[in-house]
Amino acid sequence: KNQVEQSPQSLIILEGKNCTLQCNYTVSPFSNLRWYKQDTGRGPVSLTIMTFSENTKSNGRYTATLDADTKQSSLHITASQLSDSASYICVVSDRGSTLGRLYFGRGTQLTVWP
Amino acid sequence: EADIYQTPRYLVIGTGKKITLECSQTMGHDKMYWYQQDPGMELHLIHYSYGVNSTEKGDLSSESTVSRIRTEHFPLTLESARPSHTSQYLCASSELNTWNTDTQYFGPGTRLTVL
Image 1 (tube, each protein chain N blue to C red):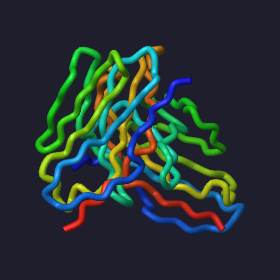
Image 2 (image 1 turned 30 degrees about the vertical axis):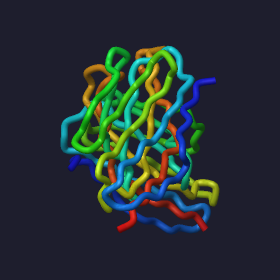
Image 3 (image 1 turned 120 degrees about the vertical axis):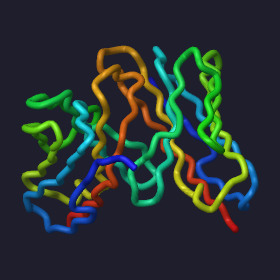
């Protein structure tokens, strides 16, 4: 069964600290992995997209890594800010059809305290 | 900031009412989608469209229907709302290049409560 599991479910850190969020997937075949940020009451916003051949991608203070062999990804946030408080969603796409189905994780709820 | 809009943002209605959730985008994207999301849960695809006059059902069975008469507009309709339809509905769009790498842009969502 194709699944995307994220950990931890929730995380609280102090402003200025770094943190790392994890994503494990069993989706096969694999096409790409995306990280989204979803603020409360808003739609998700794309942070990074990585294909099979990419093992790291950065977007400002966000750095995503991908290990396609172990089917793991991480999202590292550097020097956290209060505005980083949000849910971070890992999404994996297969290439089993023209449509290329997306599999969504349940997200990690990050809270940054001052 | 993505140019994709949803109305209403919040809706509280009684059982049995017919409702239409509106979604519009001004980016000229061919692909549009509707997702359903409950608190703390993953997004589930309920409908999608490749372009005008194209509509398909998604992974999650839904009693809703959609239409795509214009590129920029993708409304979702519930003929008879029930409490089980209470959820957050998210609309998204993307360019029709390669599904597997195109970026989806999401609207702000409609929070529906059926009493």
